[in-house]
Each structure stands twice: as structure tokens, then as C-alpha cells.
Amino acid sequence: MAKKGLTGRQKAAILLISLGPEVSAQVYKHLSEEEIEQLTLEIANVRKVDSEMKEGILDQFHSLVLAQDYISQGGISYAQSVLEKALGETEAMNIINRLTSTLQVRPFDFARKSDPSQILNFIQNEHPQTIALILSYLESEQAGQILSDLPQEVQADVAKRIALMDSTSPEIINEVEAILEQKLSTTAMSDYTETGGIEAVVEVLNSVDRSTERTILDALEIQDPELAEEIKKRMFVFEDIVTLDNRSIQRVIRDCENEDLQLALKVASDEVKEIVLSNMSQRMAETFKDEMEFMGPVRLRDVEEAQTRIVAVIRRLEEAGEIIIARGGGDDIIV
Image 1 (cartoon, rainbow, N blue to C red):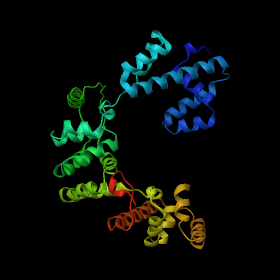
Image 2: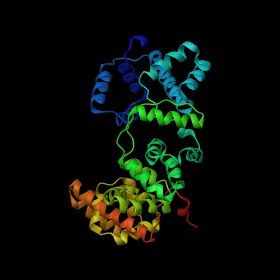
Image 3: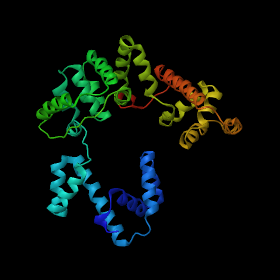
Image 4: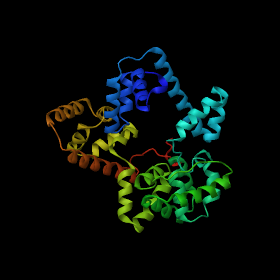
């Protein structure tokens, strides 16, 4: 099989063969069932890969990865300029054409490279819906800093609009993006992407300081109690217990029912099990291991309910100032 005559799927199969089973298994985790089935069939049909073909496919893949990295750094024009210097005009154009046929650059890509305080200066007087749209496309830490610096009377409104946002028409995205881009004197490419939602506002709130988070959630509890409760449920999940310090974990263990902890740990990751059990006495840890071993199969719903109760304990202890959950603000520094 000549390299030029290969389909994209055949090239992908040869690439995975070249990378080896461990790396290929990690790639498979990001593919759909249909893609896995099609790719596995191609791999099965490959009989022999000579060294020249293998090196050619790896070089091509490496060039595409570099091009995508260049695009993320400075846009398509920047990527093309760098590739032309490295590979020549023809090869650079071929790579860019292959990428741009399928590549979608997220809206406000230019803004994600800008300083949060600079963005704040341009958007703080805009309508809350416009601010919510822009923040939902930024990195969570970046958006969290901007949200923290907005006037308190605006913060909860913007957070609510992010949470309730479903999708926005490309015309509106393009218009807002063009105005902000002009103000920031940068370049970007836009697409039609769904954004916002509960997860988006949770990521943003996880990046703000504790004081800002409380202000926003208190206001949301008045405006929309159900939304506030849903956001709080997702602010800290059971697996995040690994981010707590040992003293806090020990306090959580004391305040939780043993049955809940055993159910939650039954299907938890090794990292979670290790950090929780290591904060118990040796006798208690051994008892827990025995109980979990003899517990047998458990219903996923029972596990999730147990984890929810444990998270509720963690949130209660944090609100009471008994433990500290590390987050993006300066008021969580421990001295």
C-alpha cells in the first residue's frame, strides 16, 4: 500500500499499530463505538507495515499535531507561516488544508489569550447576557477572575444566565466576537458551538474566591432555588475528596455513616480508596476492607446516593468553617 493511496482510516490504523497497544488503548477511550469498530477492522486488515511507510505516517501525524499547536497559539496564518519556514510552502499548504477541512476553532479563541483584567474593562458595562456569553467561552480560571471582579449586583445574574444558556446563533456569536476582537485588536476564528449550562457555571464558580461564590449562590437561592441547589450539588463531587487535606478527610470520616463510606468506596478509584483508608486507624481500615469485600454487588443508585450524602456532609463542614476546600481564590491560603 503506497502512503499516498491510503485512506484516512487506513493511516489511522497504521499510526495506532506504530504507537503500540498501550497508547492505542488510551486513544480508543476517546472514540465512539462506531469509530472503534471501524478502526479495529482496518487494523485487522493490515498485514504488514514496512519501516518507510511507518516513518511516513508518523511524520505526517507529527506535522498535523504541530500545525494544530501553532493554530492554537496564534491562528491559522501564524501556523502557515511557521510551517512554510520549516517544511516549505507546498507542504505547509497541504497540512493547513487537511486541518481546516475538519478543524473548528472555538469562538473567542483570541480572548483566551488575553489578560482577564483587559477583557473586564471592555465588557463590564455590557448587558449581563453578553457578559455571560463571553465568559462561557473563556477558560474557567479566566472567567472566574472576571466574574469575581464584576459588581456584586451583576455577578449572580451573569452566573444564572451562564447556567441557563443552551446554544446561541452563530450570527450573535459572530457579532459579539467581532466587537470584542476589534476592541482587543486581535484575530480569531468563529464557529457554531453549544456552550453554557450548569457544568459551565460550576467550572467558573470553582475558580472564583469563596466570598464571591457565597455571594452568587446566596443571590441565586433567592432568585432560583432549584438552580442554586443543582449548582451546589455539582460544585464538589465525591472523587474530589482527594483534594482535601488529611485533617479534613479525617473529620469527614468521623461525620459520615460507615455504611455510606463503604458503599462509596466500593466502586471508587484506587486513589480515592487509598487516601480515605490511609486516614483511618489500621483496625478501622481493615474492617472497611473486609466489609467491602463481603458486601458483594451493589446497585449504582445506592452508591450515588451514598456519595451524595457524603458530599452534603463535606459542604456542611465547609460552610461551618470546619474544613477548607481548595479553590481559585486567595482566601483559601492556609498559614
